[in-house]
Image (cartoon, rainbow, N blue to C red; front, top):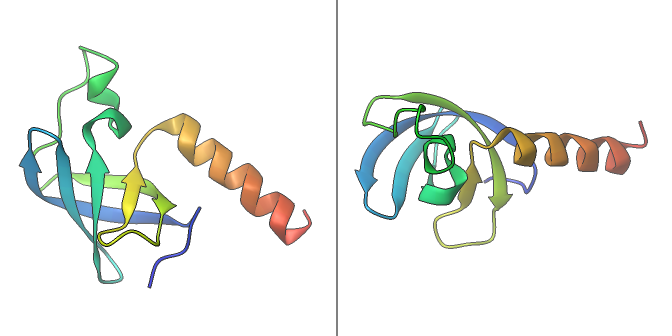
Length: 88
């Protein structure tokens, strides 16, 4: 359903001490580990809450519950990898 390095818009549906479960707009669920959300690194950034809308990148689509990231650096890396793959 998901592909590594794919970008998606998601909605947080549940938050736990280790991360957030999210629903993707096109269907399917994923997980954002707490260290893959900016609030882990920046005390001025609010932690995720149920209902939050986020733009993410797929880090590992093969996991049983795919892993996503909200971090700008991960999104930038995915864009470079897609560009290289697509020959741009």
